[in-house]
Length: 408
Image: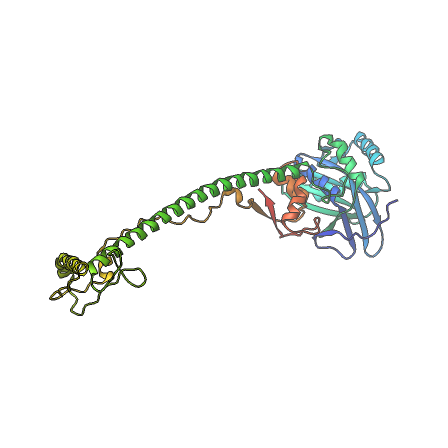
């Protein structure tokens, strides 16, 4: 037996009156939302429980669609056959409920006039405090009326609440067997990921794998380029070192002077290196140094021959001082240009986060209705994915004006 109690998981639509509180279960609201989108004129029964008090409370847990309704003389007419069929379905799928009112979806303005609504309600519903959900597609206006002895009174707001509602789910599956997966017998908007969500994740994983393969190819190319740059740099360094050694040898020969003669006749210093003789005098200009270089070379040769023969070396009148730096400066050194360092690994489009759209919640929206509107009839299967994207711990509570991230 169904025991009425105020649910904890609710969402408020509009302003709630102090004297009357209306609670509509999410599956029942979703069913009416689907009827609204079909267009044309359709009507049905609202099923639930009501309790008098201060305030009076009504719970709508189910809805049954009339097979046929007619418009006659500016009012909605419900044939007896439609009533019989509705009561049969009510007995087959719903227990411990009563008729709490009706819903009407139409674009015929003559059927939405207050006088027409009151006349239709009076002919079919005799109890007080019954309600009417009205969707006027011509004006795109949703209204909820409460009927009493004085006639219809429009409510300023009501609550949407969430609970396990197997009865309404079974009825929805019976009307659309092909959509049984969407109406799986699990709590509304709180079940495990269905096939559509799994396919969505599979597509995202496939894109990530392709991105990784692309990045691997780029990394291999970068490594090959870095290896070639390293080889080129090493060859250039070796080439420069070899040239510098040659220059030092030439300077040692040109300098001559106070070298100590080794036993084999070669001039070496204490450390086995050529010793450069420093002679006081003025440093010649670059042009003069170029002209006197051959003379210095010949003087060095004569000095060396004099040391070998044991004769004293004749001092030259003026021997220009030559420094290694001056010689090395005159030697053209061309350093091969190395390739620039490889740039940072480019990001690929596959590494980018998936794109999302933003959606502002409107009055009367539910997550399932939003998914149905944006993604089609199978869109409500992406509800859990949307909850994950928006970090919603309570997947069933949204409010007017809330900004939601939705997958493209």
